[in-house]
Image (cartoon, rainbow, N blue to C red; front, side):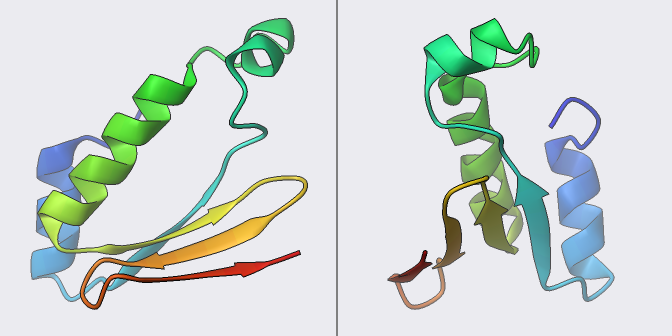
Length: 80
């Protein structure tokens, strides 16, 4: 999340990249702070918003849940 900016995401979409697979250790700020991850949930949320704006799909993976989000048809699927 610290190295992929919105402009790069747009260029990826223009080059026919369809989705990003991103791993988040947690969606809990206390845990992220404790493991010194260097970002909080709000930064992850902004990253996801930028992915959507760039026209890409996002596959999020955590240690507990894998979540695929399709912004094109507003469907969300969870697998545990």
